[in-house]
Image (cartoon, rainbow, N blue to C red):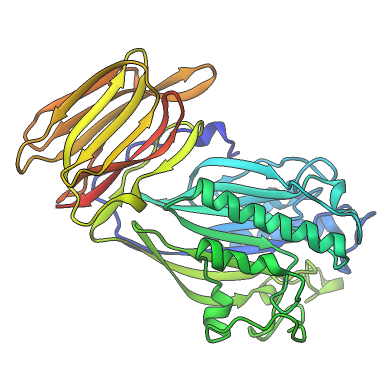
Length: 441
């Protein structure tokens, strides 16, 4: 079973990499609250329904599935699902968040975050620690998409609206902190409608994070519903795509990977009961949402896989990289471990990440010389995986190294015609996690 510890390290992949591809993304509130607390107006028993949901997940093989309300029947879903990568449950109702993800591809940096605010004005939202989950999903070499799974506060009382708007603002702020420069997909049960005037925070993803809504793009001709207008209610399952549910998918690309939503569909018609007594009945009171995405790598900017662990503060040089960048001076500091990495570009732009410790070493690149290969070694310090060693090799064979080598090393080679011009990762007083940013030359 997938856990945070297993996602800390990724193996170095072959230099030849895909430059475009497709993936399918499903968001589904699976109605997993205990039957005694909530029937969800669904026929059949919840354990058997959950097994059917897992069977459908296996049958359709969607690339990434975000589940909400995956509480007390989580084991039943996983019993019949066969996805290779799956988050471990955080617990049943009153203990866990009900947020889980299954996928055909691996990820790094999986994190669970509890909401700062909740409301019991219309129910029992404070009974269980609802919130968000975060991961950097890795569908191909050098391709990362930051995926968020959310389940916001329900209800329409004033306190519910306050809590829900706080929840979604918390997600938007988290994106600004932890997904700077990255492609992002947010999927989940927002309990929000564009038509509901009080649901103001659902629009903050567009204004603050530059996220698009594929339902708006593809089914509403790019026009967002008017706040305060009549609700565009859906049947379940829905045979039309122009109605609105509280379940949403939102996305953006990055300077490295472009994302495009090719199709949007309410997928509930493919998740109906197969028990003869309830044949054709829905398995959840929510319509699952399916979006087909296309991704493509930039012809001018790329990134490597990550080395190290999910500790420290996120940084990303991508938004500050100038046009036609070229490295001028490489600087590392290290002793027992890798303390810092720095790079000066020929136009004067400088990047520096990590602490102030260690012995500093530098290499000035000559005309037509590029940093093309990087060896990174990791180890454990204070129960955290960190980068202990780095070695840069240039196109002319010169090298620069810092830190202490270990038995756990990876070598990253820039794609043909590309060279290192920046970094991304996590660091504080040392470099915990690192990936290289490449630019074409």
